[in-house]
Length: 115
Image (cartoon, rainbow, N blue to C red; front, side, top):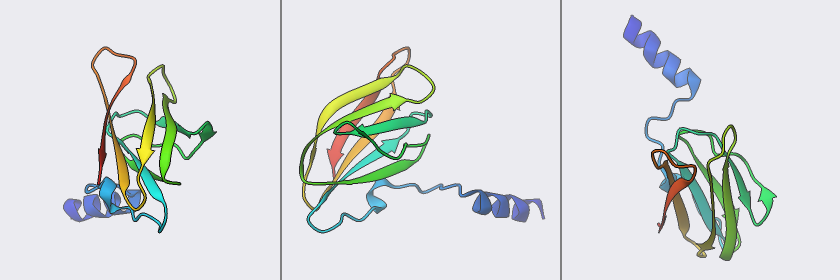
């Protein structure tokens, strides 16, 4: 009985055990920047100076953009960690930003790769 309640609770709470940044479809003629937030922080995301939907802790968030170079800023909502860089978006592809935290550092460690 308790196992069934636990499964029901997890299902209702929206917990995603198989969160995969490559699950997002790329719209035709566009690129996709995906912030894969593995930092444990809620992060404010800015692309080309515009505030976008936040990337919550341990979730990934996709952002549809035109192909080309984009300025991306990640700013910890309740702290001082940050990251900024120019990121390439390729037409028809996902640009994944895998965000983690370096111990004792005020910056995010971000690995960028294409899928």
